[in-house]
Image (tube, rainbow, N blue to C red):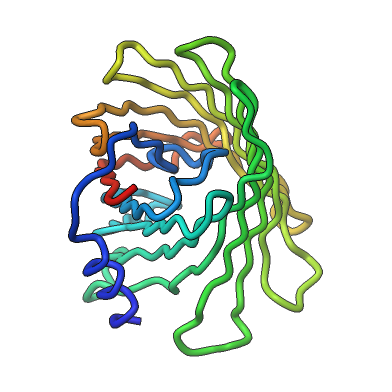
Length: 235
């Protein structure tokens, strides 16, 4: 795993692209756009969260994206987590995936996202995520994004429905914000839902800074906030 991560980092040491970066963070709603062919994009950050009074830190979380075709990107996702009073920082499972561009019109876009994890120990813990990604530009500075999909454990028919809906607004050429609702619905747990919002700042055409804050919609006790940076190389 470490060799694979190192390969991605080495491949990224080159000049920036010229067109403006589009990211899958900081919101939970994945963009309906893939990155340009032959480009590499790194999206990373840290998140502080409290769930059922257990505090955890992602230090860092990261997503590597590689444009391997004009309609397809490869993805590698992972995080290093400090959870509660547990000693040390633990790596989550590595997720490997693809995003495919299905439709790309001026205002309406569709993509498909698929991820599976690479379990460290138990091969029966194979997790999958399948999502349909949609976006519509209401006007030149306002866009709505919708994700619909399922995730679960391989071989288990009881996957859960996952969704995300985000409204993004550009305040200027460099500054924007979003509001969002995302969550899951399952037979065992019913509805789990979060609301969040955040800001993004385009430092350069190829570098974006971001922040986010969210809270659960049922009891308003679980919450998270985070900061991040995304950089694209090549094009």
